[in-house]
Image 1 (cartoon, rainbow, N blue to C red):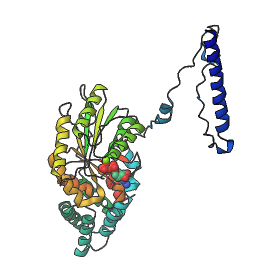
Image 2: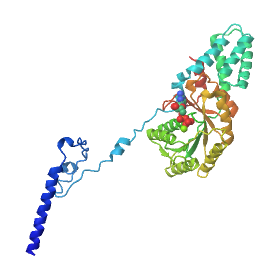
Image 3: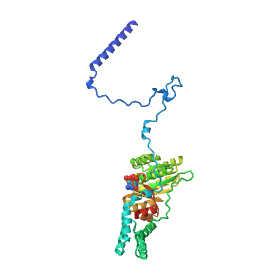
Image 4: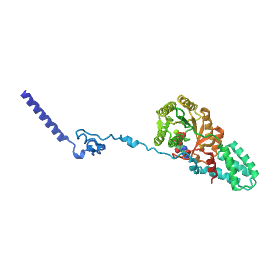
Length: 393
Ligand SMILES: Nc1nc2c(ncn2[C@@H]2O[C@H](COP(=O)(O)OP(=O)(O)O)[C@@H](O)[C@H]2O)c(=O)[nH]1
Ligand SMILES: [Mg+2]
C-alpha cells in the first residue's frame, strides 16, 4: 500500500509542476490583456454592516444576522410615475377662451365690423353670409342667421356698436343652442361604473381626449379605468398607458392585433371589479369606408353591453377638417348611437362655426372642446363663453 501511496503523491506533484510550468510559459503578457471591464456596480443595500440601524441587532445580542427592511425593487423606484393632479374642470373654457383667437378674428370681429357699417346693402349681406359659410357655420344655419339679422337691423335703423354686438351675440347663441343637455354621463350607477366609448377617425384626437378626460375625472375625485381597444398599433396602447400612468388610472391592454372587443370587455370587467366610477374605452380610428372596421365598432359596443350599459358614446371630431369631418361623423352616427361630440383642435382653426353645423347635422350636442395639445386643454363646452370669446371683449 505504501508503494502505491508514494506513486500517487509523486504523480500528483509532477502534475502540479507540469500545469504550473505550462501556465508560466503560456500566460498572457500584461500588454496583451484586454482592457479591464468596468467594475460591476456595488450592491447598494447594506447587509450586516450596520445592524443597529435595523433595530434588531442589539436586542438579539448580535448573535443573529440582521437584515435591513427590504428595499423596493430598483425598477419600481425608477418607474413609479408621479401622479399629477389637474386643475378643476369647472371654468376651464373661460381660462382657455383666448385659444379661440383665430375664430374670433374671422367670425366674431369680421361680423361685428360688417354689421357696424352705415349702409348694409346686398353686397355687405353677401359678405356676412360668406363669412359665416367660411367659418363652417353651415348653409342652413347661415341662411337663418342672415334673415334674422336683416330683420332686426331694419328695426334698429342706426346702430351703436353695443347694439350690434348684442344683436350678434343673441343670434350666434341661438344657433349654438344653449339649452341642449351637455351633461357628460360619467356617473356610476348601482354596482356598475359608467362606460364611455370614444370613437372617431384616425388622428382626430381620440386617445388624447381619452387621456385628458381621465385627468379631469380623476381631478374631480373619480376612480377611472381606461381600455386600450385600439389594438392595431402597439404605439397607441403605449400612448394611452402614458396617460393612465400620469393620472393614476389603470389601463387594460391586449396583445397587438388582438380583438378590440375583448379588451373593451376586460376593461369594463375590471372597472366593475375595482368599483371604478368610470371606464373609458379608446378605440382605433376606423375609416368609414372600411365596412369591416365599422362592423367591428358595432361589435365592441355590443360586447361591452354584455357587462354594463354604455352611457356615453363620444364622437371625436377634428374641427379643422370641416365638411369632410362632418361626413365621417354621420357614418359613425349610423353605426353607434353617438350621444356627444368632443370637438378637438378648435385652437387651430378659424372655423369655429363647426360647433353650430355639427350639432345641427347630427342632432347631438358638443359636450367637450379641445383647445390645445396640453393635458389640461380640454373643457366642457359652454355656449355663452364660446360666443363671448368669438366676439371678444
Ligand atoms: N392643437 C390641438 N391638438 C390636438 C388636440 N387634441 C388632439 N390633438 C393632437 O392631435 C394629434 C392626434 O391625436 P391622437 O389622440 O393620437 O388621435 P387619435 O388617432 O384619434 O387617437 C396629436 O398630436 C394630439 O396632440 C387639440 O384640442 N388641439
Ligand atoms: Mg389613438
